[in-house]
Length: 304
Image 1: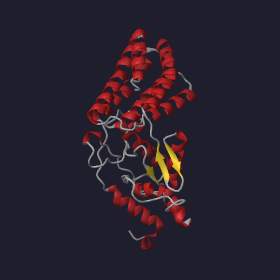
Image 2: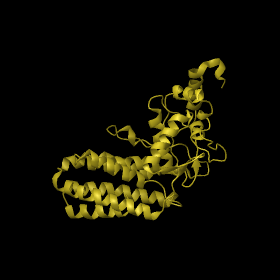
Image 3: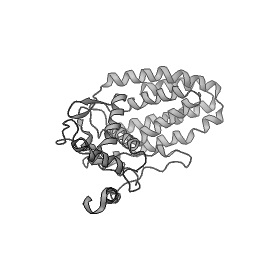
Image 4: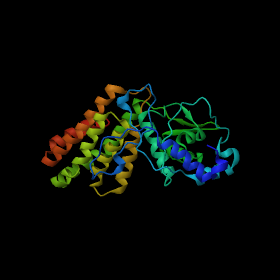
């Protein structure tokens, strides 16, 4: 692609059009009432990975953030290699097309998905310019998204190199599950005594979406649908701060462990967690508080 004949904006659109033809598979269809956030936007998996754990981003409009790209180029080396960031020898990532609007938000969502699926591997260092090239955007929105992940504790800055994905073990996962239980379980039990059955029945599509995502084996789709279900339950309490804090803890609990499970065993765990959602709704609709208490305890013990 020669930018000298097309102009910056034309070159960006041409690059996006080249990528628009890449093959993509769709995630399982969601109910019409469900938000598009329940769709998986995970980048393509390496060829050696089992096909059951692959899902790809739906086709996006062929547009990119030309303004950020021009700003990086105007800054000279800053747009390509920042503070000596290395750009060689890193594990490759796919290049999904992104929409022009809210590029930073889309890159952040894609990086979060890559964390859940393990494409961003714990302990590996990734530079913003290399990731930007893989995504087909400028380095600026990638760097901003990585800074947000730094604040969330997912990655850490490595001077003159980029960002390292944080390594964590089972102990940290257990701590997150304990904190989530301390916050969510009392709220769920209180809601079980006050929310009418028809309100619980309205959450059925969200619970069923988690079952479909788990059955498909797409960890990114399941992670999003799982957070959507738990968020909808907690939203019945009418406390926005509670929902935000719980969502942050939930997202962190979904990051993969070093040497975590995958394949059939991991998929079986997802399916079991998803069916706990539907069983919990059945108990809430029936007003069976004993069963609700038991199911909620088991669900958080499994970090679901």
